Length: 251
Image 1 (cartoon, rainbow, N blue to C red):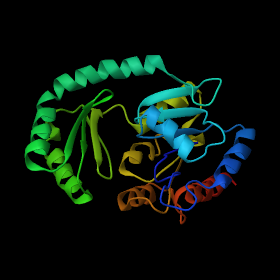
Image 2 (cartoon, rainbow, N blue to C red; image 1 turned 180 degrees about the vertical axis):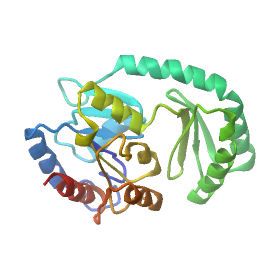
Image 3 (tube, rainbow, N blue to C red; image 1 turned 90 degrees about the vertical axis):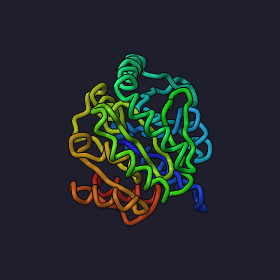
Image 4 (cartoon, rainbow, N blue to C red; image 1 turned 135 degrees about the vertical axis):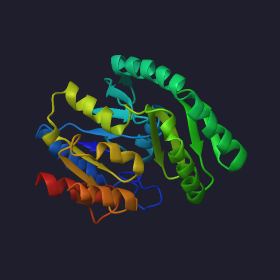
């Protein structure tokens, strides 16, 4: 069971950030042998803060951070172990990506700094990213980026609301979920995935998950995608919608 976090489970502006009934549902499913993961664009540190904010009573069986870092829990909640062989492969492929996409990265960086009010991000773990000043500005940036993707076929673009990052195309929420399912020997037909934002689309594909869904507060693009691929669009928002989708597929 793969859940996005922000927007799908965690709704900070609501009276109940994450409905406790979600954890009761997960607890029941775990007794039936289901495993669950949070698959998020947040860093590990950001997700640890998210667990606290949402008052998680127990940890997921797995965690995917930054859309591509796979972690398994330690003996105590808060201690997580990165899957190192997968991470090493990511680092090797990413080094190749930055060599081949250097012209693209340079062009986008120059555009962002000189022609927008957006912030260019260069930090450990995310050496090429953007924070737009508004959703409207992000639309302009997306058009510029799309016009220059021809430079390299290794370019992966991950974005959600005003945030965008660039990485190797083979590392996203979808490929991370596929790798996790491969490691624990779960067939595609027994994988459930749900999200709300553009960066969830990679995992909301029939080749990745046999059961795909989005919550009622999802971006219109995500709702159209899930609908066109035979998935389930929940009527309810946030964790209420996640519970609704679980019942739809697993009752």
